[in-house]
Amino acid sequence: MKKKKKRFAKLKKVLAGFLALVLVVGLTIVGTLAYLSTQSNKVTNVFTATGNIKLNLIEPSFDSEEASKFKPAGEYPKDPTLVNTTGDDSSEWVILRVDYMVSPDEDTAYSNMSKDDIIYKNQTTTKLDAANKKGLITIGDFPGSDWIKLDLSSSWLTNASKVKQAGSENAVGKNAICEFYVYKKSLSSDGNVKNKTTAELHNMNNIGASVKTSPLFSKITVHSQEQLELNGYTMDTLPRFKIDIVGGAIKNEGDDSTLTGGKTELDVADTKSQTIMNNLLGLVADKTPSNAANSSSSLG
Image (tube, rainbow, N blue to C red; front, side):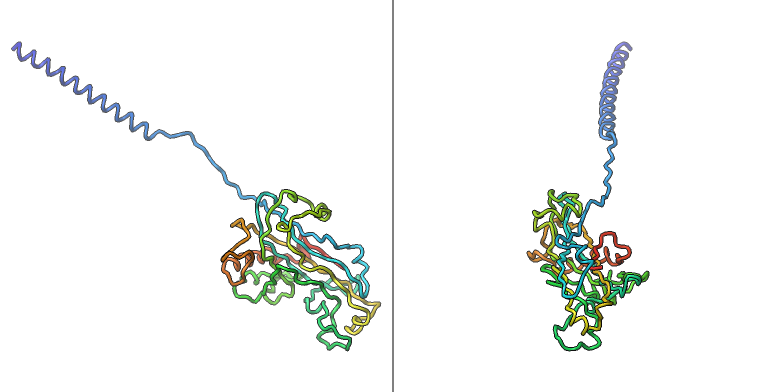
């Protein structure tokens, strides 16, 4: 009996040790599981989109006071130029919308004209036919280098359907007589012009060429009295006219000046280029002279 008791007592000690070992192992496993499932403190990162892309439309050579007293055979410098004033390493693709507006006198509202109607196309001294009797001016160096005129009838320009004319609440689409010009190259940024006002930019003569466009055109010349009379005008009823311009920009997501094939300019046949131009058109499609915030009026 005593041997059995001793043997049983010994077995109890062994079992107790085994249970203790199991218990220790079990605690170790539980501890490991707890470690693997422990949660860290919570960190929330909020990403907010900003409108941090800026653009200024300047005309360094334009004298509004001189232009307001225009006369036959007068020549008036006018050089609409866009400048990227973002200044945070953001490059941009840009567009200009151009509206031609004419009013017969000071008491009558301006109405739309096409460029073909407001300019004089036939440089002759003979009497013009009826189709060319509206010409008032010529526009110098138009369009300037590196500008592409958008053809609103292009099938890929889906935003053409949104184009409105001045004084119109409804879109007129591809039949609009306003014009749109896209700059071929993206405009880089430069801290020297960051957040500069239009007045400040006008007084700067060191704006980098990569930060600004070339002018869309250089000057406006009013026809001579002889030519104006041939076009059907009399000198005591010369109309007021103005050329309204508004610019728009989108961020160049590639952040460089190249698109495809190593080119440094937009390729109208390239799908990516078409998307860029279509998006640019959407920005200014309804920015008519009556609601465009950043427009330029001349010779009014």
